[in-house]
Structure formats: structure tokens, C-alpha cells
Length: 301
Image (cartoon, rainbow, N blue to C red; front, side, top):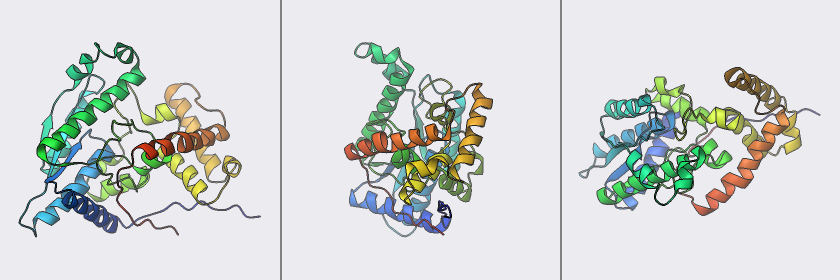
């Protein structure tokens, strides 16, 4: 019996950028909002989201009397390297949008009085930092009568739930949550941000943190496993699948070369972790908070 191929979708970047842009403008107008606020980290997700929104607002503003504005906020803490802040500012400058840079480290330290236990643990401190950023963005959106645009992609939000509940998940809408990380990178290049497309994903919530170091696999592996599940393959079939197993082996070797240790020893361990996060992390989070996502046309062929 022939093994069922896992079909990985492609997109027409111009069509999808128009779909996302229409969704953003419609969401903003229905909320009687004056535009969007967005957190800029210099990473590919926030850069792509900002570029898509700016493109949509420029198109809208050219044909309407009222004006929609995108405002970027760069909100570093002590766990961010200077390059994160610099890249966020550069993105705003390239897009020609208003941008404010404000350190939130003082706010983080203020929690020593109420949550000292969180500040002594990198994981909890990171999530606390994310929730503080969300609070700042939410308050900025309220005082400016704007909409908070999320920057999570499909692999993070729906694949494995790799975001902070009430932190970077606390948004009014999710423009790129229909795109896996692979297609977000393609969209970044299409929009003129090729230099950001290959940047190593990092939440910037812990010193030296990267998503790959945390997870033990890259987002293309998440996409492959979750697409396999969606296309009817069983967990056991994914363990030995001709597309999954070689990629898992390659990423285990890359992890060992990068960090001098193994996080996983078998493909089944990696598949199990993705499915565990998909079912026990992503799904419960989405039941609690589910901002509207832009509908996008993905091509399966």
C-alpha cells in the first residue's frame, strides 16, 4: 500500500496579502477604531504583520476621507538584546509609521512586591513580561481608540499553542494566524523584508532563548505533523512517515550540533510532543481566548 503523501500548502502572496488587508480594515472599521497598535520585536512575524497592515491602510487611505493609522511599540526588557530593539525601530522606519520605544523593565521589577517567586524563575518571569507588554499595548489601544493586532502565526497559535495566555495572545485580531511560519517567511520576502525572513525565531522572554532550543524542532516540523493529522494520518503512521522521519532525524542532528546535547532521541518522541502540545496546550488556550483570524486562501495540490 502506498504511503499517503502529506500535502503542504502554498499561496499566492498578492492574493493572501489582499485577503489579510481586507480583514484588517473590515475589523478596524467595524470596531469604529482609528487604526491598529502592534508590538514590534524585529522578528519576522511582527514585521510581516506590520507590513501587511501598513499596505492595507495605505490602500484604504488613498480612497477614503478618514485615515487609518498603524502605530508600532517597541517594549524591551532586560531579557532583550539591543539588536531586538534596534531591529524593531528599523522596521517602523522602513514602513514609515509612528513608533514609540519604552522599556518595561521598571514595571517588571515592580512585581517584586507581589510576585517575587515569578522573578526568580526565567520561565515565569518571561510570561510575566509578555503579560505586561500586552497590558501596555491594550492600554495604548484604548487611549488611542485603536485595535491591538496580534502577530502569532498558525504553527504557534493553532499548532502547538506557543504563546503566553493573556500575554502575546491577548489581542483583538490575528492577521497572520492562518499562515504557517514557512509562509510567513515567504510573505516577508514578498513584502520586501527578505533580511527578516531568515531570522531565528525567539520570544525574547529569557536570556539566550530561541524557539528551536525550547521546542527541539523547527516550525516546518510542526506544520508537517499537524497537516498530517488534519489529512487523516494516525499518530503511529507519522512516526515512520517518509516525509516526517527524515526531517525529524535532520533536526535532531542539528539540535545536537547547536547545543551539544539531545532533546529527543527518536522521531516518535518528537511527534508525540507536537501532538501533546497541539491537543493539550493549543486547543485549551483557544477555548479561552480566540481572536478573529484572517481567512486566507492556501493552495493544496
